[in-house]
Amino acid sequence: MIKLLPKKSKKVFLLIDTENRAYFSGENFAEGVVVVSNKELTYFADSRYISAVKNAFKDLPVNVLLLEDEYSVKTYLESINAKSVYTDYRKISVSEFERYKKLGVKLKDCAKEIDKLRSKKSAGEIKLIKKACDIIDLALEKTLPFIKEGVSELEIKEKLIEYIKFFGGETESFESIVAFGANSAVPHHQTGNTTLTKESVVLIDTGASYKGYKSDITRTYYFGESPSEKFLETYQAVLNANLLAEEKITCGILAKDGDLIARDYLKGKNLDKYFTHSLGHGVGLEIHEGVRLGPKSTDKLKNGTVFTIEPGVYLENQFGIRIEDTVVLSNGKVKPLTKLDKKLKKL
Ligand SMILES: [Mn+2]
Image (cartoon, rainbow, N blue to C red):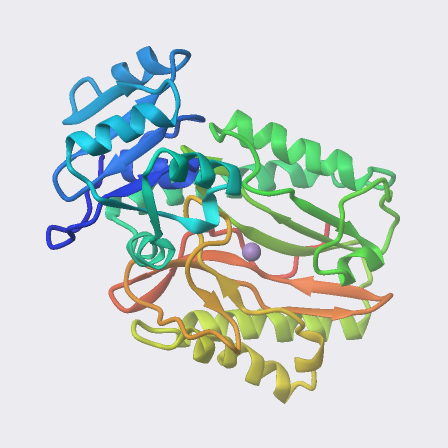
């Protein structure tokens, strides 16, 4: 499915990064340049890709042109009489910017408009994200039997990647976090050579990429028979915060108020000071895109927004617990797209 700019837009967008190209063209090629207006979409591909690109768009109203260098794009822009052109300033290097400028192509920023367009997912996009969520649910479930005494965090990460590919994903959607024991208390622990010992917490934060679209899930498990009372209580509190946010977030709510639902609940349990990150983030072609569900956010959550709900509590040198799902706001309510059980599981 190709996407043009909204009918009333008089702008021309020039997109050079993988995700924005994939968003508008519906095809996830590693290279190229996309120029899109409210009338047409042109895909520039270099000689290595052009036949594959032509083939992908053969039944669609897409112009496919040969990309030799920026000059090819400039010539086309002149032919459609585009005076100034908009690009996503977060995605262009200074040297690329300078090369276009040298050729007389006037570039302006459209990052905000891109975010706005991309934050409302189409039914087709939600299908692809759902598939990425199904893949990670399956991959994580299949990986659990490999969590045994003596296995390393990295070995579990490799298993996840293997299963993501087995179930049809490209690969992980970000560097998966596998954290054993006290490592789980570091929210962005670097997965390493720590091996698993009995009576340890296991935190896994992972996701799959499917046709460029991402999923994101975190589950916290207990490896052993007798978790401490403190762990059990904290787990229940994080789970309740997760479920409460899922229940109370509705269409039109401010993202910061969504964050507050979980934060206030944890405050009631005296755990809010250990909830050191925001409640969630938008997900799509990028693992972090669009909305941010944090105390300083000015975003609004609307139908069609896909985001994560991921409260966490981290007790230094002891353990960390995070429970995360990728969800979509649909008909005003939160609908989880990742579906693995959230009740505490002992491995
Ligand atoms: Mn996340």
